[in-house]
Length: 134
Image (cartoon, rainbow, N blue to C red; front, side):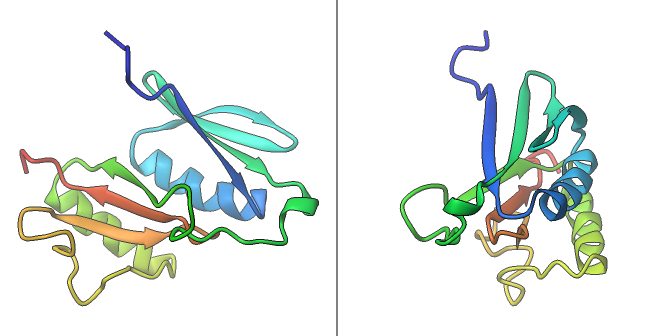
């Protein structure tokens, strides 16, 4: 039954080209495929869920996103395993993506929570968590 599962997430971004380069790589690493594309947006899909990125109109760019304001704090994705988290971390560093909580990585969420935390180009926090089976 699909009731209650996320259908899609739509994020408005400050620079569509920069964000889709960042997110496209990451989402494809996590098993998503390109889904839709139009002049002001693009999406990726995995099974029944898709994530959409839309260029924010210039009149709304004056107040930048911050995860501590009301609204979205972060997006967390399932990773395959601890090894997958380690490999993804290396790829993020190679792409000059700063790892959040680096002094506690990969256990920043606690001893039983193996994950990597980082930010997208608009500073939306992203987390990829190892499966419990790993």
